[in-house]
Amino acid sequence: MENEVEADWLDLLKTWLDAYQNPAGNSLLYTFVIKTAQAEWHRLRVQREYDFHLFGQGNSPIGAWQPHEIKNYDLSLRYLTVAERRSSANTECSNTTGKLMRRQPLTPAGTETITNRL
Image 1 (tube, one colour):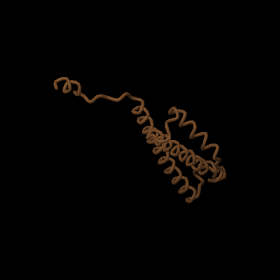
Image 2: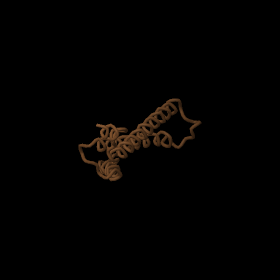
Image 3: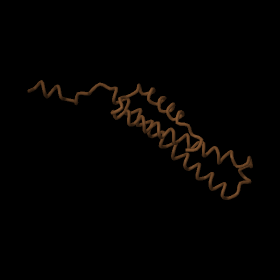
């Protein structure tokens, strides 16, 4: 998009991959980390759009805005809320997946007892 630099995206992606110890490219955790980085990138993009609508209205106070300016602001606030929720949900999913992938395999409850009886 306009005013976006690929290097910024690559830095953000590297930050997320480093946070999860660079998971293998074909793993489930890698997929979740990529989705989380994409959601964070989208959230940052929407935040810039929101900031533009909030602060880019010719420095006029909110009470002096025209109806179309208020509508644009309301829409950008909704988009920001959705982007923040999506980013938060993806981060939580990546955190949960990361914890599960690092955990030792569990033995189903009672398996030793049944095996010992046979």
